Amino acid sequence: MNARATGAGLLTTAALVLLGALPADAAESLPPAPTPEQAASAPGTLETLSRFFARDGAVARSAAAPRVEGRSVPVRILSPDFVAGKPGVPVARVEFRASRAVSSDGRKASLWTVEQPGGWQVVNIATGDDEIRYAELGGGGLVFREPQIDAWYVQKGAKVLPLDEDAVRAVGRNGTSLAAYRDRVVRAYGDKLPGSAYARKGAAGGYGEPRAAEPAAAPVAAPGRGSGDGPAVTVASTTAGVGAGLALLLLMSAAAIRRRRATTREP
Image 1: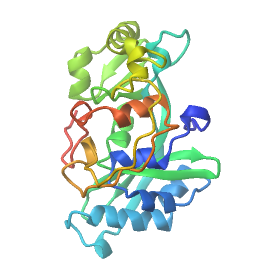
Image 2 (image 1 turned 120 degrees about the vertical axis):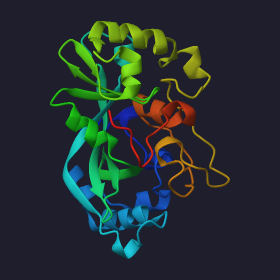
Image 3 (image 1 turned 90 degrees about the vertical axis):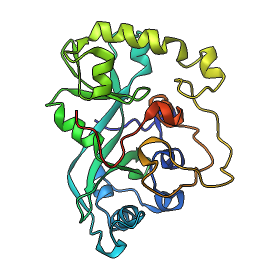
Image 4 (image 1 turned 90 degrees about the horizontal axis):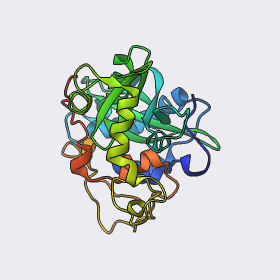
């Protein structure tokens, strides 16, 4: 399944730079390719990965020797249409694809690619390989993330099962029914959908289309997953056009997203 590439679903490089340690100018210089795998393994991407893995001095840039392992996986985010109760919609929708990159010292990163008019393009590099690892743990089910609480689940039929401790706290170790999960997210986010007063205020964490951000006056630390283990990055000037699911993921507070550090919790 392809990441959505029309209207509000078209993701901007500028917005996704916020989550990782990929400088905006480096991201914009990565050319599109016919497939996510080709975009992830392109020479320019590998060079950018070398800088990414060398940013904290753990390995020399010349010795990073990054490689991309396996195929990309679709990354699904809790759908606002599901929260709104629209009949027949899936619990989550694909927002991008992710590929696992590995450094010579064994550290891992996730390459995020989206489909642009000219092909697939890498738009973010994030520490760790949560996206791919949870897709593998899902065992063929529909794996998705509830970004507000940094929880990963797998839907198998009419059951929603937890894949990490955040999800266990939300639905219990044995999971819950799809109907009960919908009731939970409606209670939590039903008043934060597009068009709501919450969304119109532009409050972080809602489903509303984000307002354009002002250009950053100085570098800021990327919240969550990139925080604390990499250099500050400059947030680019706008998040306009980001899909509602990823807008939620990008704009909520750092405390809420709590992205994994290099030492990722095991589910």
